[in-house]
Length: 327
Picture 1 (tube, rainbow, N blue to C red):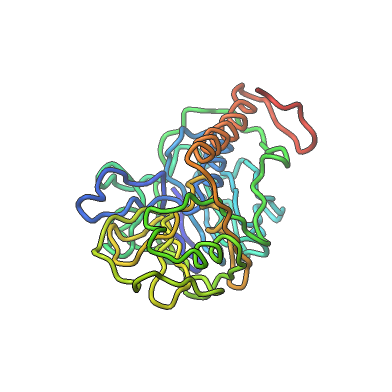
Picture 2 (picture 1 turned 90 degrees about the vertical axis):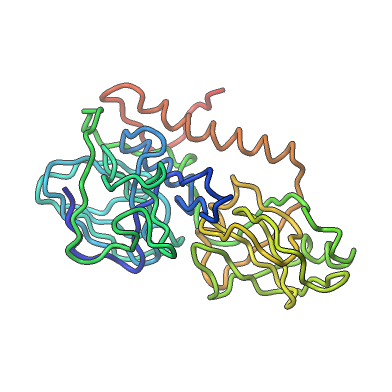
């Protein structure tokens, strides 16, 4: 079991999400930074899709009531266990009674804490992800609070050796963000100038951002005939442009329909970059094809499988530094 001594700013239980229910108005939810979340589970020795904790900007403090194995990845929240700092991209044992504290993010926004065996909360429609707006999933459908107690599932793996991802496999967070996006599905509703502005301008993250979407600030994108359309489907990555002309990029908790035209759709493998962007960070969009998007997805999966292969044998420890690439 894990006791929450300090919950942080917004800490929720998340997994790979709840697909299959958008037709009923329920977002997929799940980890905002799916790459860091997946790598945290790899480091912890968990199967894909295991529930973990997602922390936002200000991390929490957790006491492990039993011996455990934990891993952190994503934003650098200055984690400390047993008086020792822990870098993102690390897995390590925690003794019973030990405390793991996160001071706050000095780079990036979201960090993931995975525990071997996974965070045990009830499944809701096949997922443990928290969707706070509807109050479902996770722990009572809400962010964690001081005094909460989380169960931990039974672990299959027994190796307690420290694990460290090679530096080239640790996601680089912070700084300018480049997002590949497929034009459409309603790019014809924007002027030629507007489409050129979208892919050629610099935007900045505003304080109007959360798990639902990111409102950006920058060059206004002109519409052909106004900003209203008959509401249609929305997915994470969809870029809506309301009457103000500035784009809104939808993220994990995005609503299922919307009434603004969508000039482009950010590809899934790049959304983690936006999830780690802070207010004022620069965002640029790069046009890509469906074929390029599929290749990016393959590379993302290969990245995760490469990391998993490093720890496939008990007692094998990866260390930072140059490493021969695998096919």
